[in-house]
Amino acid sequence: MTYFLFLFLTSLLITGIDSSATFTLSNNCDYTVWPGILSNAGISPLRITGFQLQKGESKTINVPSSWGGRLWGRTLCTEDSAGKFTCVTGDCGSGKVECSGGGAATPATLAEFTLNGDNGMDFYDVSLVDGYNLPMLVLPQGGAGENCTSTGCTVDLNGACPSELKVTSSDGERVACTSACDAFGQAQYCCNGEYGSPDTCKPSSYSKVFKTACPRAYSYAYDDKTSTFTCTGADYLITFCPSPNNSKKSYSSSSDPQIQTPEIWNSSIVYEGAMEISGSTSIFGLCKLFWSATSLLLLFVLFE
Image (cartoon, rainbow, N blue to C red; front, side, top):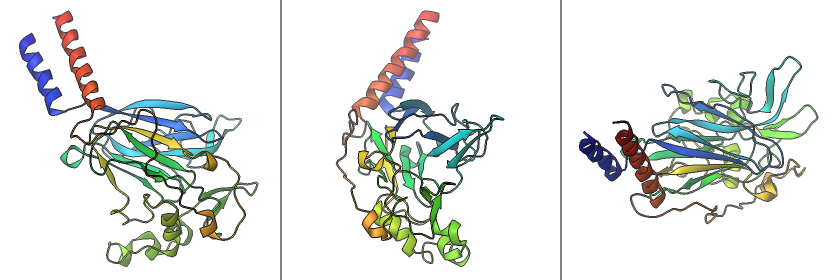
């Protein structure tokens, strides 16, 4: 029996099957962020669906290899005297730190994932289709693939937001930039009705402001060609406020959006531990597989 189990585990190692991936969420903002997590329809929710990240804090969670869903950051969150938890941006409506199946209220910067999709690839993006509330960067770690690279929006769009899209807090602070769809509710901005196809729904002047600032992020519903990325065998680092000069909550008062949306994207940005190779399987991924297979074999031998 031990021999056949060994052959099975060896087969898993050779074929590159892995049981899970890790997401590390890191807060580089100068304020607290409360990440929220929502699984796609038909996908089991993760054990953790919301938590607090103080300035400089990180948290790593395990996700199944077939998981799909979205992550975002909530800001300016408080708990009232009755214990109800709410956030000014990205609130998920649960009344608690855990989102428990609630999605982000717009506007919010979203990181979207479908793991182990077509041909075993992970598909991921950062979306501004539902608006923007804070900078975010997604960086694959240990993955492989021609399109396995970082994506996100690293600039301050709150300061750059057109006046008709800006969202302010009760004290007048700019805290988010809503989408033209939410602001105006018109089909050409929402890509529905007669505009519900790639041929009829085109970038608007508002989505172009987002795209100019963040060329790798989704700016409208059919922005697929430049905004979807793929990896195999990767873990992911999701960083809020990745650029130090964009982690502050102070915003410029300039009325010219283009002045406030400089392209500071650096395609060579690398974090320690982001070991990307060009082969079909990463060294990091192979180590994970070997350790998992070895651990299972040892457990079987011990309890046989």
